[in-house]
Amino acid sequence: AEIFGFSTELRSLTQGKATFTSKFESYEPVPSYIQGELVKAELEYH
Image 1 (spheres, one colour):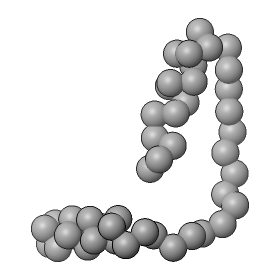
Image 2 (cartoon, rainbow, N blue to C red):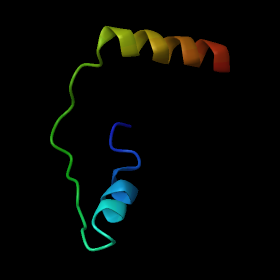
Image 3 (tube, helix red, strand yellow):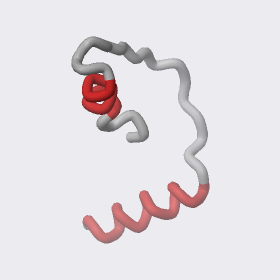
Image 4 (cartoon, one colour):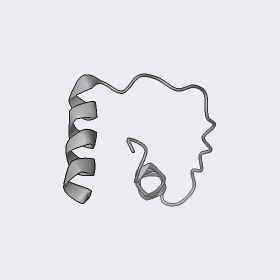
């Protein structure tokens, strides 16, 4: 989620000349404040 929009921003800043690739590296625990937001969103969805 944190990378959402990065590609567009990068192209904008470099006038369309830059590219990037991403590669999965590892999983990390979700911070507790984000866990709460995810649980709340899921409960509201169902």
